[in-house]
Length: 407
Image (cartoon, rainbow, N blue to C red; front, side, top):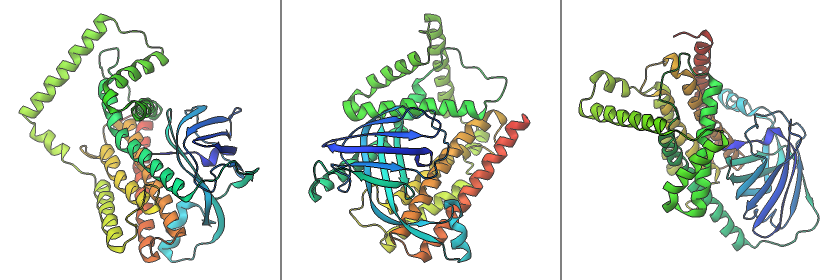
């Protein structure tokens, strides 16, 4: 899931007057110093060779404490050339207009799309049609159509590689990190804040591994993984584990491996039945994602040469990913989960909800560019709105259970 930070932006500037390099500064609500951009690559033709300044007429506070002050990384798609229809109602209310058949109020605006892949924070996106935009000075150089095509393919390849390997890196990292103390159950359930911090720690590690894999190659994975785990431990001020702690950890890992082998050899019928449980919301979202892909192919919503940035591709990918994300939170356990798993489940549900929100934004772009007929687009909006509402209801239920402090 991308960091979407446009609402918290006060003002900013990006500069691509040097070929192959995009620099910039972003000022946010509640932060005195700007976030600095140092990115490899170029903007699209409309901004290539140019310096762009922008301001947000209505900035809002955002949870950006973990956004690194120096953003080094790779350029994604950067453009301000699209004219789009901007709804005059909140995005969360769009499905209500389709559901009731009412005409939605729109106005035309310039859309800014600023995307990069950061070594510290992964994929970061500013996507908005409400900013005031201004090109400053004369262009230092011009990009040809052929050069832009090469840049777009490079952007798509970088993003595809990032998304494909992120989950694998995160999973491997979680398996490799073993606490310096023996694993024990806490007497109190984990809070949502603690679960978020744990997930953020895992995300940070995965992002760093991904950034280095792009530069050093996948053959260096084992070395990179070990070095980044050590680096994270040093940043957290962890002391070097003693030989006794290492021995206890090794003993615990061996015990878990034995338990896993025993479970495979002599499976528990009751546990197998529990693991087969599939939550109804997972079934609905997964089935919807498959139907959407079939409809896209049958109706020709997406051209054969469409890249990762194409709105239909974003819609299909976001809905397809939302299903497994929900499954990770909901499947294999009866609802609601026991209280010690509530916070972790909330965090996973929030990640899944983010992909559903990405799908909603993609639907808006599909509408603006007339890529999908209204008779198809309306039901899609209604379904996505329902999925988000159902996810919010599950999150609220778990938060209430944590607040009660009892099962």
